[in-house]
Image (cartoon, rainbow, N blue to C red; front, top):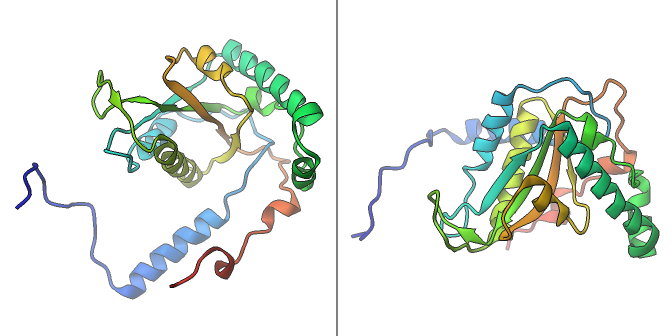
Length: 224
């Protein structure tokens, strides 16, 4: 007998093995078409679409169900310009002084550089934060657990939801990212996790050939 309140499980539909395989294969095909994009259109994205994607992210599992994430959606042109300036300053230092040659060699086939103009072009810019303290209800102030793992899972769901909505995404991680907390007005306990850029791809968007090289199943999984 459980000593905590419970409700019946809902949301799961019984299906035969063939249906299960068909559905997971269709989802796999959908997500296999996802690409990181650096060339965005400025075509607006309805706020309702972004909100539904954020609610999907908010359904992710988390340590003790504390949901230790916060998503700042940045609309203001002034804030976007500040973020771009700060990010490009960090990126120039990274490419010119910080990054070891092995790292630069690994990035070379992807064609990345310090120019982050997409931060002001793409219509959706989301700064994702992990919270050291919080809890499942507004106003809670308890220690959060497995923050990085929980925020990573939520971010994955967010990317999948935006892709389902027909939007392209890019994960951007300037290092350090402390400037994000100040620009977004987040408290000291909120640590920037990454910047997620999303929107419709530009008509002439391209993808590096190197980005199409994905590991086969036998290289990423094993049955023991």
